[in-house]
Image (cartoon, rainbow, N blue to C red; front, side, top):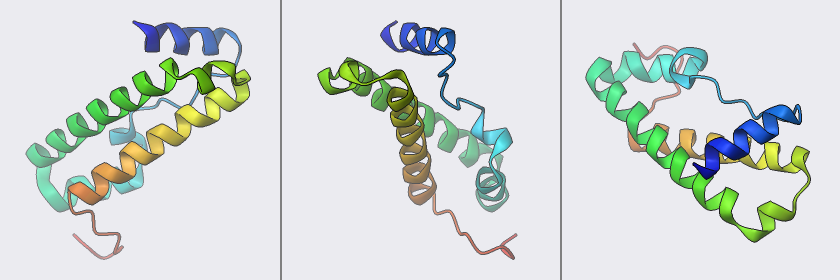
Length: 101
C-alpha cells in the first residue's frame, strides 16, 4: 500500500520515522495498561493503530506532504504518531499520576 511504500522509501533514504511498538516502549502505555487492564488496553492499542494508519494515509497522499524534503516527512509522521497516541490516552482515561496503580 501507499503508506508501506513511503515508509520503505524513507528507510532507504535513512529517514525512517520512529515506528516502534508503543505498547512495549512507552512508559505511559505501560501505566495505562496497569490502569485499565489487559483487555481494554488491547482495545486501546487497536484504536491507536487504526487512528495512526488513517492519519498516515491522509498525510502521505496530501500534496503538501509530497513536496516536503524527507527529513520533514519523517518529522510529520512522528508528529502524527504522537497525536494518535495522545488521543488514545485521553479516550481511554489515562491518569498521568505516578502513584496510580
